[in-house]
Length: 374
Image (tube, rainbow, N blue to C red; front, side, top):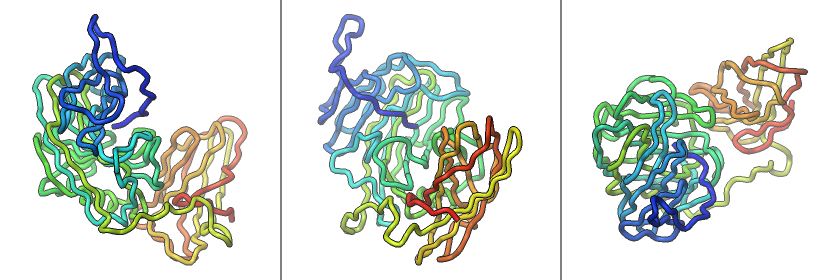
């Protein structure tokens, strides 16, 4: 789980009368200690290690080595039916504008020929935590803010904690069986893979998990892989937990970098059109939405985004996965209606509540490109 990386302003913290070093960037040598809330440093010239104490005001410190990190102080304690205290982690890619040195991420999934990673953990007893591996994806090549899709791999779960959402079945990936959970935390969708027993080390293909999420209709090959992260989510305790080694590599098979797709339509107009048909009453409304592919190429997977006027809130939907964050609505295709041939259409609908006078949204984007109204 990740939260905003805030500006790092202090070079040290005075704790109990002694100075505690805080890393603010550059390469870490062995035994670099980070206690600053969102402090980070670089190891191996290619990975970022971050303290990322986002869920508590209590102190947390990590000791960074040349191959990973260890939690040395963790004074936070959160209820197990809520969010964890932090996500100390090591990553490749971009996290809230902080990109690892020389990374080729974000990169479009369709361009990735291989994505491999290896992780080794050290666990402790008597604490409540998970050992989680995060894979982040978004329809755009963004390097800041919240991505729309989070893949979580739970290699260890200690205590009465559970992933976001609810279980939807099991699957076999990386030669192991995983319990699959699916849900949303209100900011992004989450699909979690939970190991039935602790795994201390794993070498695997990241693409296998991305492909499984794609096959569930949650993303398409046009989405972008933005970061690969591994660490811990502690709820209570956790001193001694460690990532002792981490590696990750994303290969595009020698394909040269390409300019990200334009966010404005090409000459001749947008390649999509949206018809929005509402029916409102005093405190509620329904809306039928029809998307038409007006371009000459098929659309393989679609994500429609738009802003609802103030006072409107989606409560349930059909024929699409519809989520709302603030005023922004994101509608994604299901497994059976993700392909739009030239001239083809897809329709979905939803019900919502309204406070005050009703009005309809005025602009829509499909896979990042603006649509015309029909």
